Image (cartoon, rainbow, N blue to C red; front, side, top):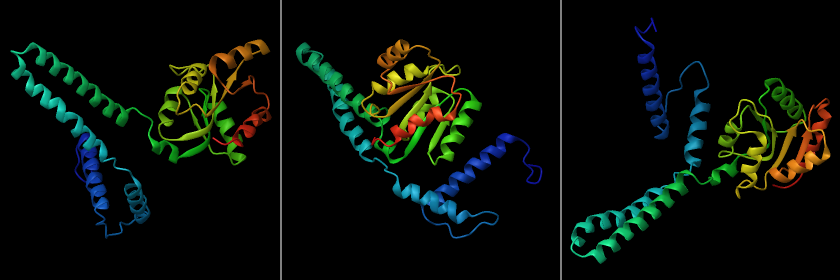
Length: 247
């Protein structure tokens, strides 16, 4: 900061953001001709260009939005003309309601529905565990066996990732102390969603009786339960059987 006479961090951040926006725009226009020194910039350029070229812009959303807005605007403009005619006025109100419903469907489909791009990225296991030691231990075990595993601490992180990728198996501890959602509730949410239902969910729980295990399997819809404490990593080998099943 001193070298460039920048007196506060806010200015540095603004300069950084503006510079990067300009640079991304340059890459988008495919105008990059100078190779900066110090790192492999050409690889970054190629990576970003591939992402841009392969990205579905979904321009149809804007067209759908305009199509649904037009009757809504027209109905609102027509309201005043029907003040002296109660029947037509009520009919126009109903048209507005219907237009709002159609508009809401378009927006929900765009921003809330699971996107097809989620299926473009597949991993073997999505692991949810609030103990960092257990996360790293289990992650190391599966990576050593050439299994593609992603480990997160909370159920909320897992739900966010499910919009971006498709795991073959979700491995979740039931008692997630740092999450607002426990593993059993997360399993119910996944199994009740048509888009995720085929994903295998394996719960980890400190259960002691077979009756309790069967009860939990029935209430959550989980595909299997691993009982704690996991004294040997070999107890996790049941997941290899599920990894062989097609999604």
